[in-house]
Image (cartoon, rainbow, N blue to C red; front, side, top):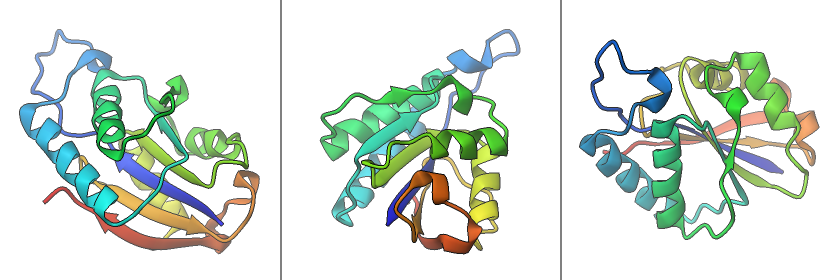
Length: 159
């Protein structure tokens, strides 16, 4: 069994048009929301073997907050592909995950993450900021994940 947790970064600050999107930080609400959802996630007993995140500042900050609350002791893997990725790039990145990883937390951006959820499950909403969706795949290898062995389990929202 492989378990994928899909999380959209927390809310970002309002930016001006001169600011590069990659460098936009979390808002105070975003920081609080990511703490709240991480605490809910932890209280449900979920375990993480690997956190993979977009390296964009807001995703990085979200990953660090979640990592601290979950007492995740390993390094967070930052993958450039996740920032502004297309759906097929996200799926391809997932298939490169070592099979020793059973529980993967992916932190990134819309629209790719919503497309990922719609592709694999019956989830039909837009993934909100700070929301985590749990998907279980009935297989033993990340190379085998697909719609036929995927099952939507739960959505965890900050409030």
